[in-house]
Structures are given as structure tokens and as C-alpha cells.
Amino acid sequence: MSKKPLILGIESSCDETAASIITENEKGLPEILSNIVSSQVDIHKEYGGVVPELAARSHIEKIDWIVEKAINKSGVSLNEIDAVASTAGPGLVVCLSVGLSFGKALARSMKKPFIAVNHLEGHALSPKLNSSINYPYLFFLISGGHSQYLCVKNLGTYKRLGTTIDDALGEAFDKTAKLLGVEFPGGPQIEVLADKGDSNRYELPKPILNKGGCNLSFAGLKTAVLKIAKELKTDQEKFDLAASFQKTINEILLKKTQNAMKEFEQIVKVEKKKLVTAGGVAANKKIRKTLIDLCKKENYECIFPPIDLCGDNAAMIAMVGLEKFKLKEFNNLDYPVKPRWALDESAVFLKGAGVNLK
Image 1 (tube, one colour):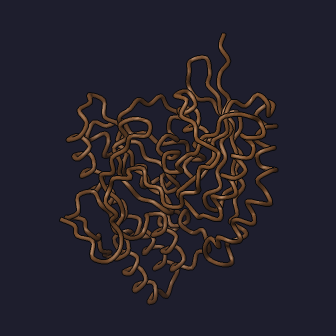
Image 2 (cartoon, rainbow, N blue to C red; image 1 turned 90 degrees about the vertical axis):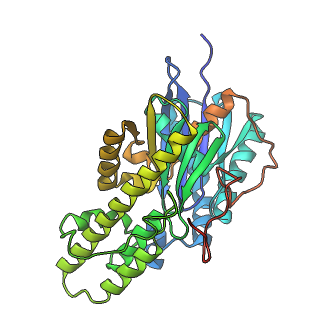
Image 3 (tube, helix red, strand yellow; image 1 turned 135 degrees about the vertical axis):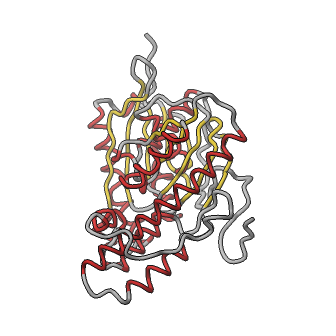
């Protein structure tokens, strides 16, 4: 029986220090042996957001211990690992440098292959950790830093169908939470507050809903929330605004995902259509229900990673590493940090004032 590959994944693109070891089971499906994530929420809470220098310092202090813990929990020894995969981008350059440098140094010392991983590709492949998914599929990435629709044709082959032209969805959730007095990171609490409110209380804008295909915009919605938040006098009004915000997001994503499905179907002709949704915001239960209901209507299989694999983690980085290892797609040890690294590098940059949307 041939030895199954053992891949060590390392993630440090923002404010989580993470390490994971994965392999394959007898059926050739990925198996997570360990997945250690150390959050920095307590460090950044008082600043209302991630402070890059503090994040990098925490990564430096923890990464050795986190990797050691992942190895110990996996039940394998360091010399049994077949390759090291580290996030090289996109993300905060001072944070990326920590995990990337550690991974390259470890690979060199072990004389094992090194694999540089795109963090977004990790999210794109994260549902493969618990589902048997074949290419191609429609991928919806919703996180704190990115919101995109992509056609995933194969490993390393992506076509962007739509993206946010301003704020990412997770950023919109966090900023709205801050306006409602919820401490960082407040995005996940919006859903909790919304359960107590009247979603019809406030009429909020849905930017570029009827133009721009499946491109997204959330800045105007955030501004509308800001104006209303200044006038709030009771907790119930706060709950109602949270509920109205959540409802508006659901309605935007419903329409834009329908548009993305139409574009996907023009590119790819497959009998079994799949929508894969990943990223931190994919843990939002109301968004999940909206997408599940849409997929039933449009005859798509609706796929999410487990809740604990929606946010940043190293298992998804190791997953990309596993697929690239099998194809012998390795990188040199001088591979650079890439703080801006699009999955579809041919796509036009769409962000900021003056963006022309049809």
C-alpha cells in the first residue's frame, strides 16, 4: 500500500495564527489530522480593528508553538511530513511574512517541497475538506476582506464573474456592528441582534442591485446605517436596524447570486451545477438559508464548509497544498510575499470612485 501524503499547512495572512496537518483516507478523500487556530481578537479589540504591527508580533510569538501543537495533535512526526504549504498572499504583508518565512525555513531544513498558497484559493477549496466536489463549480467568497463570484474551472484556473467595488461583505457587517455599539469583531453579532428585531422597520438602500451584473457594493448601505444609527434611542430600535440590515443583505445576495448563476451557465455547461460558498461570512445562518433556498429553486447543489472552517484556518491551506503536491506543483524558496494576489489575475481592477458599471 502506497504511503498517503502528509501536508503541513501554515496560515498567518491577518489575525489568526494557524497550522494544520492533513492527509488522505483509503478512499482518497482529505482527512484532517489536526487544525490549530489561535485568534488575536483580545489583542485588537480595544482598537476596533486589526493593527498590523501587533498582529505580526503575535504571529512571531506564537507560530513555533502553534506548528508544534499541530504536529503533536496529528499523531505524526515532523520527519514524516511530505511538504509544507504556507499562505503567500493576499493579506497584510507584515503578517504574511511570518508564516511564509517560517514555512520556507522549515521546508528547507527538512529538505521537503515547499508550496506557496493563495489564501483565496484556500477558501475556494475548503469545502473539499468535508465534501466530494468535482470541478467546475460556481464559487462565492464572502469574508472580511473579499467578496467575489468566481467560476472555478480547475485547480489554479479561475474566472472572476463579479466582485465588490468598495467594501467587502464582512467589512460591512463589522462596521455596522460598530455603529450599533458592538465591540470588534462585531459582524457575527448582527445575526444575534437581528433575531430580536423587526426587519421591516427601516428601508435601506441596495446599491447597484439592478446594474453591474453580479458585482457588489456595500458602502452606500453602510452610510445609510450610519445616518439612522445616530438617531437610535432604544435597544429595540438597535435590534430593528440590525434586522433590517440583515434582510437587505439577504435580498442583495439573492439577486446578485442569481445573476452569477446565469453568467456561470454561459461559461460552463454541466448537468450537475454546484454553488460553493466559503469565507467567514458564510457562517451566517440567514445568508446560508437564502442561498440554500435559491439553489433548490435553480437546481444547484449548495455546498458550504463546516462552520469552523469558514473563517481563516490552515486546513484549507493544507488542502491546496495536498492537491498541488499530487501534481508536483512546487515553489522555490525565494517565493515572495504577495499582499495583492487575485485568483483571476486577468480580471479588471474594480474598486473606488469612477468605476463604470453597465
